[in-house]
Structures are given as C-alpha cells and as structure tokens.
Length: 336
Image (cartoon, one colour):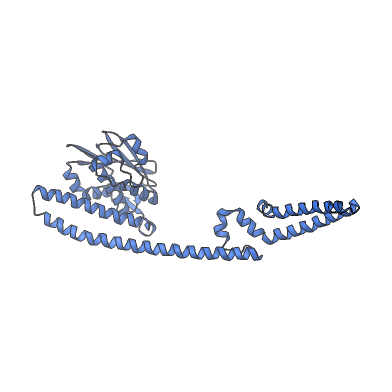
C-alpha cells in the first residue's frame, strides 16, 4: 500500500494544485459563485479521484505486493502479476530475464563440467608416469633417488588434492555414508603415508579402540585423515618425535584427536587456518603448505556432518579434533 501511494503522489499533488487553481480562477475573473457550488465540485472530483485510485490499486495490487517483497520476487515473477497492461509487460520482461539467466547458468555449468572432466583425466594421465618413475627409482639406493622419491610423493599428493577439490562441487553425487571401523581407517591412512613417516623418522602412536565405529564415507574419511596426518608430519622436525592418534567416546559422539609435536601455529593465525589458500607465518617459513588442505578438510566435514577443530601452541605442537556424531561401539565380530 505504501508503494502505491508513493506511485500516485504526483497525481495527488497535481489534483491538489487543480483544486486551488479553480477557486483562484473564479476570484481573478470576478465571477461570484456560491461557495457551496465550489465545495460540491471539489467533493465530486475527490470522490471520482478516490474511485479511480481504488480501481487502480485493485488492478495493480499483485504487482505492488511483489515489488514490496523483493526477496520473493524471484519466485513471484513466475506467476501472474495481474492482467493490467503494465503488469503483463513486467511479467513478460521478468520471464525473459529469467530465461536468459537460466541459459547463462546452464552454459556455465556445462563449462564447469567439461573443466572437471578434463582435470580428472589429466590427473589420471599424470599418475601413470609418476608410478613408472617410482618403480624405476626403487632399484636405486643413492641419496638423489631418495630426494626424487620425496618430490614424486609431493606431486602425487598435489594431484590427489586437485581431484578431490574438483569433486567437492559434486559432493552429493560422490559419497556413501556407512558404519566404518575408526581404527581400521586410521591404520589405512597411516599405511598410505608410511613413506612420509619413515623419511621424517616420526612414529605413529595409535590409541583407538578397535571397536569404535563412525558413520562416514570411506573415501572421503581417508582423504580427511590423510590431509591431517600429512600436515602433522610435515610440520614436525627433529628425531624421536611422534604423532598420536587417540579416540574417546563422549555420549553418542566419538572424538578423534590427532596430535603432533611440531612447530605449532601462531595465535594470530589460528582463526584463519581453515581459510582457502591461507598458509600462515609458519607455512611460509617451511614452504610445505598450499593453504588448501585444512580448508578442504573442513568443507568435507561439513558435508558429512562431522566437526573439525584445531588447537595449537607455538613450538609445542598441534591437535586436530574430529567429532563424529551418532557413532557406535561395535562388538569384536563386526565386519566378520
């Protein structure tokens, strides 16, 4: 209603001006008209104006209601805004804009799909020569071969991150939640990264009940654990250090802590470690961080219904905590 009156304000102002001009005209011409006749004319004109405004409002009511709620206009323009010529014209215009927008969105989606397919094919093609080089280096024992192996491992990790990043936009089509034994998943993640543990002379201390089971996706959980373990090892220096993986049951949740004895994270960086491409002061010093690992971990956890938190102290180490809701403690014969 307020928008309607704003729209009709010029008309009301002109009408008021007209009502002032008519008596003034009679007065200037010297005609002596009774006041009652002039008032009758003003009242009659006002009634006619009010009837016109009432008809106008009924005619454009749907349009004014839609315009007063711009947040819902995206849905309103798909239905009729009234039969008045202006309402129909606006309705057709919005439909045209909507069709053009949908066509543009579909075009961008197709481009993104083609890009993702290309990236996935390219990554898989790159894995083949990496595997061949790794097999070739197994027969070499010199120090240079070990350095090359380490760089190849970094390349492999980088290629995997590319694949998982591209899959994140289609996450709903690429996951299956099922009960998984947590200790088994941890063991597999450590085995996947055993070469990194060996090269850095870091031990893995697993303190996870063999019967703890969590609801998650096996592939994505392996990715989460791999990213956290890789960070824990890469940011731990010195000999005799270890990464501790422990779990406890709190109510219906299972809490998994992965604690390293590494360099830690600066207090001013703690709130930003989950931001994409953020490496932080320590990451820039050690040149190990891409700034995407923890970001992807948090995004995957959100989609799986898990919770990830991080605590750290400089020069003392970092603890990444994963919380699994509605988890279960299974009997020893699970999966048998």
